[in-house]
Every structure is written in C-alpha cells, then in structure tokens.
Amino acid sequence: MDKCNYKEIPNNNERFVKLKGQSDWKPFLKQLLICSGVWTSVFLYGLSVGAPTVFIPQIRREANSTEVITTNMASWLTSAFGFSGFPFVLILSILTKFVGRKIPFVIAVLDSLAAFIVLYCSTSVTHILISQIMQGLFCASHTTITIMIMTEYISPKYRGIFLTAKTATFYWGVWASNTIGTFFHWKNIPLFGIICSMYTLLTLMIWPESPYWLASRGRFEECAASHRSLKGCDEESEKELEVLINSQRQYLAGSLANKQSVTKRISGFFKTITSKGFCKPTALSILTALLSFCSGKLIFALYAVDILKKVTNSESTAYIAMLIIDGFTVVSMYAGCALAKHLKRRTLLLGASTIGAAFLFILSIYLYCIKLQLIPENQYVTIALFIAFTIAVSCGPLSVSISVYGELIPIRSRNLSVCIIALTGKLVTGLSLKLAPLIFKNFGVHGTCLTFAIISVVTIVTLYKYLPETKDKTLQQINDLIMGVKPNTGQTTVKLIVDDKDV
Image 1 (tube, one colour):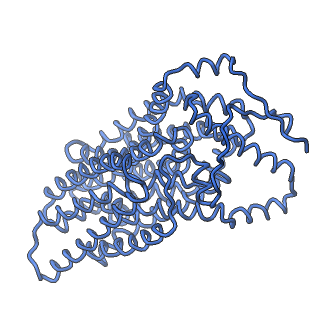
Image 2 (image 1 turned 90 degrees about the vertical axis):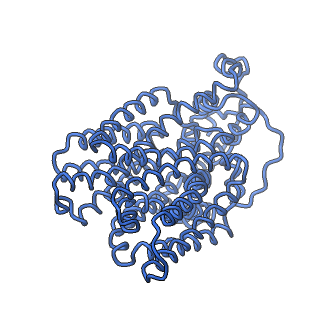
Image 3 (image 1 turned 60 degrees about the vertical axis):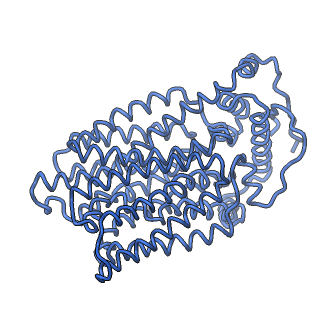
C-alpha cells in the first residue's frame, strides 16, 4: 500500500481563519448550548423515572384502594423502562456506529415526547404502563448516546464538570417530579416533560456531527471543521485534533490493508472483545458506572415514600423528608462539581464512596437496633442519617462516576464497549427495581442498607486497585494510560489531514 500522504490545511482557508479569529468564549458557549440540550434530556429522564414514586400513591388515594395498582404492578411501573430499554441499547449502538450521534439522539427525544403525550392522555393503569415502556428507548439513549456526545463534543477542560452536572440534572428531574406529585396533580409531570422535550429538539438544530465519529468514517476534513467549530483553534484543541486524526488514520489504513473474510472478521471480533485494550477499560467503566448504583441511592430515591413511611410511621413526614433528601441530593451533587474542579476525580470518587458505605453500615446497625428494641426510635435521627448518606454519595459516586466511566470507554470499538456497558446497566437496574419491593419485604430497610454497603465496599476496593486518574486528559491520553503506553513527546504540528485517495 502506498505511504499515506499528509497535507496541511492552508491557514488562509476562509473557514479556518474565521474560526481562528473567534474569541475563546464562543466555542465554550456552543459547547454549553449543546450540553443544555443533553442536560434537559437527562432532566426528562429523571422526570420519567421519578414519576411512579408520586403517581402510584395518588392513583391509589383517588381510587381509595391499593388494588387499583397492586404491589406487582407498582414494581413493573417503576422498572419497565429498564427492561424495555434493553433491546434499544443494541439498536442505538448500531445506529451510532453507522449514522452518527445526532440522528439517533433525535429519535430518542421524539420517543420521549411521544411517551409523555401518552402519559398525559392516559385513562388507565395500562396506558401508564405503555408510556413507561415507551420511555425505554429514551432511557437507553442515556447509557449509549449521551455519554458519547458529552465525551466527544466537549473540551477536556470542561468535560468533567459538564458530565458531573449531567448526573445532577437527572436528580433535578426526580426532585421536580416528586415536588409536582406532592403538591399538584401528577398529570402536570408529563405536561412539563412535553415542554422540555420541545426545547431539546430545538437545540439539536445547531448541533454538528461528532468529530470522533467523522474521523472513524474517514471523513477527516469534516472532522476538522466539526472539531474546530466545537472546540476552537487554540493549541490544545489543535493537538487533540491532530492526535485524533493520526490515530484514526492509522487504524483505518491498517483495517484496509488487512481486508478479511467473514470467518476472519468473526475471529477478529472475538479477539477484540478478549483483548486487554477492550476488556480492561470496559470492565473499569462498568464498575465505575455501577458504583453509584451499588450505593443504593437510586433504589432509595424511587421507593423513598415507602421506605420513609416504614421508618417514620408517618405519611406526611415521609413526603416532606423525601423532598428534603431530594434537595440535599441536588445541592450535594453541585458541591461535587465544585470539588471535582479542585480534587483528583479518583480521590473524590473513592473517598466519598467510602464515606457513603460507612453511613450505610451505620444506618443498618441503627435500624436493626430499633427493630430489636435495643434503642428507642427517633425519626429525626433516621432522617439525619439518610441525609448524611445522601450528601456523601451525591458528592462522590453520583456526581463523578459518570464523568470517569465515560472517559474510560476505549476509543477502539467504542460503540461495542458502550453497548456492553449499557446492557449491563439496564439489566442490573431493571432487575433491582423490580425485585426491590421483595428485598424490602424479606430483609427490611436495615438488611437492604447492609446489602448495598457490602456491595459498595467490594466495588470500591476493586476500583482502588485498578482505576487510573482521568482528570484533564484527552480520551487518547486516558486510553494510553490504561494500556501503559508512554505519551508522545514530539512537537505538535498543526492541522494534519490525509487524502482519502491514498487510503
């Protein structure tokens, strides 16, 4: 094969000169606008996930019967999005590989809009279940597409805090859903969701395609244009662009030079998924993503009313405590954003997770002692312990884990890795939410706290041994760090593009 010939994009290129002359804040504002669309979609995700917490009690009160929504149906309404999203993880992963990041995300947002319309117009529990099942596609997009968008569209210096804010926005959605359901009729939740869906669709109109996807398809000039429109033309951005283009060029050139039969491709596929460069970052991404789930925060948030009613013996206290804990969750996650700016992500993630696990052990012991009547019950102490647990978990795993696991996803076979991570997440989430009522019934709140505490400790110890630091590093640098590759110390040249005809 002929040696790849590189050509330099002329500095007098009209588009390049225009971008070069832009102020530093213009790329930042564009990234912020794109992120606002993603954040709004994550808010919608939280809105839909949190809705069953309040509409189930409301519907039961209106019907004056718990049989209108049985315990089994309630568990399906809470977990349906996890199971229905399972096949869409595969579908969206394939779409993101062949058509890019933008179009699949448009489809996901349209699905959410349709689901909220069905929920708003629903007249039976079956209609509500259908709307929750419809949300599966949209929810699947948050473990496949949005994580790619946030890591590929955003500059390394902003990526961490933007990703952290993304997770905080999910719990804003849960809090908004709980607040609306506590003080107003639950059908205001889907109405609010319809409005937010429309805003997300409007922001999508100004999105370019992902430069990483364009590079993976060999469209390097479009990649350069997209990258510069998103991240500007400063030295760091140009260096990131050069590394991206060179890396993908070498990969595509190697793939073209080694065309294989179907049998060899299948063999190559299994070789890829068993290679260190794929398995290690994917496994670390799964563990990091599951760390926030292992804390039990999502389970406690979605079954908050039932849990707090059991430990406080008061429905009104349970609702007020739920909103207070939701408030501490959101505020603490923004505190986590601030801490992430000054602390290493690995330190913050593992340190806060350890404190959260410690509070779970304390809660478990305290509630078990109450059950044995060794100490008197004090609802203020119980709520205070839940708040302390919430603050620790929100500052650490809830706010930082998505940032870290998104950055750990390998550049090679990125779609496949995201697919595996998302499938694992959906399966664990769906099963846990479905089985949660059974776990609470058989083990009690104290037993559930102990279970999550033990799982958290095992996960923390594993990550302590293998998790690298990712703060302020490009995706390529993180990949090299995991693989043990020394960073390239050569002097950066500018704006390299390869002629497509030479490949």
